[in-house]
Image (cartoon, rainbow, N blue to C red):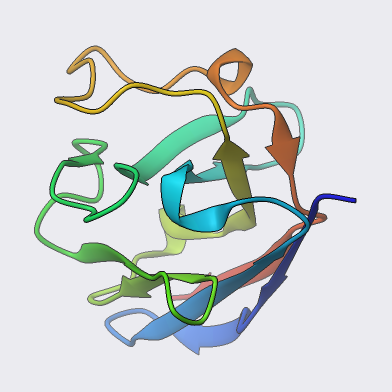
Length: 131
């Protein structure tokens, strides 16, 4: 069965860095589109970053994280990463890994990611940034 397991969350002071990871199993990872979303209580799930299938050439970043976060994938290990630098208190959220097996290859919609575009989700890892 499809499984996505996040790890690497934690607490950090503003300006610090964290790397969260997603380990995938139960599906053909290399040909799947992958993404990171985040959510805080009472708010909608927000698309943070996405990476295209196969070579990961195409990426998407929300304006709020551009220049600070980097998404990457390692198809040999069935893993995806989100390197988060210059963290801000407003980055505090539960971070979720998401996957979609049936996706195209190309530029992401600049208007943003939609949770409905991804079929599989992890349980989340908490990231807390203190000021």
